[in-house]
Image (cartoon, rainbow, N blue to C red; front, side, top):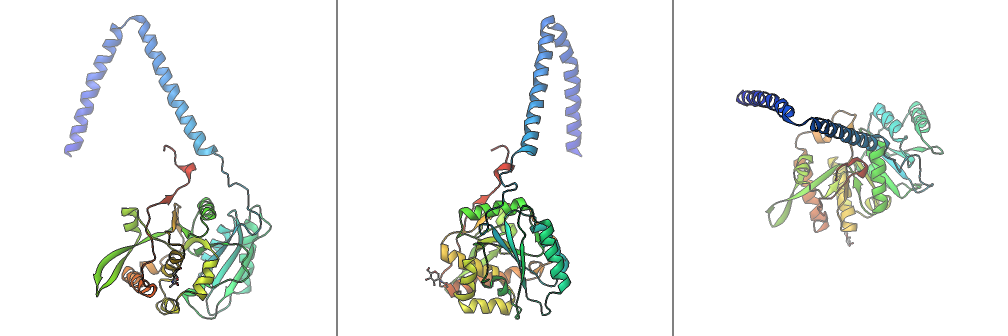
Length: 337
Ligand SMILES: *[C@@H]1O[C@H](CO)[C@@H](O)[C@H](O)[C@H]1NC(C)=O
């Protein structure tokens, strides 16, 4: 209440002081200067209008170098979509991503006991063809798994035609402009994991002579600007990592992931970091969650993730994850610096 009173007082003071003084001064000025002041005002207004016009031009008419140009066959990317008993979300996701430039193929990782119905197959196929812009048809395939394991999402795909994989959950949508930006970043750094959802491993107290880690969720990344993983629920990576995950990663990690139904994304982050010795790349993107709740909304999530960090580091014999504070943004959307 006090603040409001002060503001009112100041306003009163300004209006009473200025309205009396300015006309007085104007009257005292010689006739020519009234014209000069009008001219000055005119220039001020003109300048402001010009600024607004330039901003509008920048906002709406900045050319997009992505528009319409799809890469030659084999140089685009394959979407590997993980789904689980949510056909409506799956349809929505396929419809959306089929409209992005550069998608050559959509592979659906299917781990449900019942095979996908013909009507679902047909509906998805149609959605993929309808929405596909400037392309010769998007391939759409189901990869059927007998066993229900979170490792399925990283199973090696033999007949994959692109080097780039965009791994995505069926319940998150990113605008095509964000996906295309991330893809162009991946093209510059094809050994890196490039994604939208950053996470961090924080060193914790040493217990029993072993390094311990604490899993840092979104808030800690937001607060510190530091991360060491990007989650595979929305990330680009090279197809060779599927091969390494399935055939060369320590078996004990794959077993842990199947048993605990968790941490397959941390396992992939460890694998890539151990190969490259470099951090992943976080790309700014707006995320739209279309499902309701995932694993992360369940209790005890971050303790279980911390356990994975400790265990995997023990299996590797060291902590391969590398932290960084770099973030990629679309320069067409940064105006002033
Ligand atoms: C990590 O990388 C090193 C060096 O490239 C390699 O020898 C080792 O087998 C890798 N560790 C795991 C667990 O994959």
